[in-house]
Image 1 (cartoon, rainbow, N blue to C red):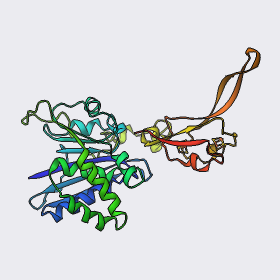
Image 2: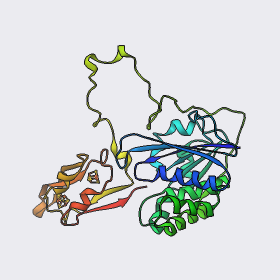
Image 3: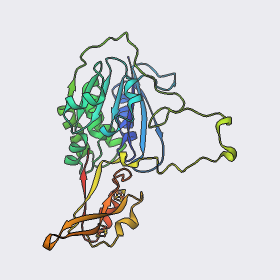
Amino acid sequence: MRIETLWLGRGGQGIVTATYIIANAAVMDGFYAIANPEFGAERRGAPVKAFLTIDKNPIEDLEPIKTPDAVIIFDDKLIDSMRFAIDAVKPGGYVIVNSAKQPEEVRKIVGRNDVYIVVVDAVGIAMKHVGLPVPNGPLAGAFSKVMGFPRLESIKTAFENQLGKAVEENFAATKEAYEVAVVLKPEKVDTSAKPKGVISTTSAFLTGPYELVGWQQVNKGGAVGPGSSLQYLTGGWRIEKPIIDHSKCIMCRKCWLYCPDDAIIEAWREAPGPRGRVFRTKVIDFDYQYCKGCGICAEVCPTGAIQMVREI
Ligand code: SF4
Ligand code: SF4
């Protein structure tokens, strides 16, 4: 028995820790396990993926995983950009998603009827027990529920080994997710069918497969342009988004000064005035295409005009 899995999420969500915990717990339960993460930009919020293989026998080949048995998605907003990984799940496999949406709605977004869809509001559960939007413990619980291993007791010991702190809180989140995760069975499975896609082996980058170009295609001097920051929509990284109460804003622009993604903008707003007049005033707003939800603007705002609200 061999289970190959791919864990996809964003920096700061504990993807790598989750795979280490499951690997550690699986070894305690008598399995062999290998967990290897792959990073992109080393920034909170940047996409991260980690591979985890568990086997009853020693794992001797270290080939990249091309068609996983399960994909675990830490943020339902990643489903579209991670379609290449979902397409590669073997028929009869599992797509485990952190989402507060209704399970049937998640099944529609995932778009596969030949795999198990497992839905758990991992962020909500983590907020309740740990006080932080870290879905890794709950997703470990959902994984254990559908795979039938590792045992919850082993996951708890793995938490102690890996975290050394807040073990009870994290384990309570794992246990609740184990109990409440919703499992939708596949509508039909042809286990002899091949998955629609295969995960690229060219070190596969996080938002999809890419092709390496030959030297003939590279511009003279190796210059690449324009800079990628405009094209790279960091708004897709958010777990929480800032909202503003304009009645509290004094237009000091401290939020603009500190925003790391240039996502604070000034916009004109029309408001009704006396005698039928319409006033135009400048207000602070957010460019949600690029706002990655770091919360710095809410932190630095001197009047408390900005609040962060949960988005997934
Ligand atoms: S949360 Fe605020 S500071 Fe952070 S990226 Fe968004 S607008 Fe900028
Ligand atoms: S920091 Fe707060 S008060 Fe200052 S401009 Fe931004 S939202 Fe307004």
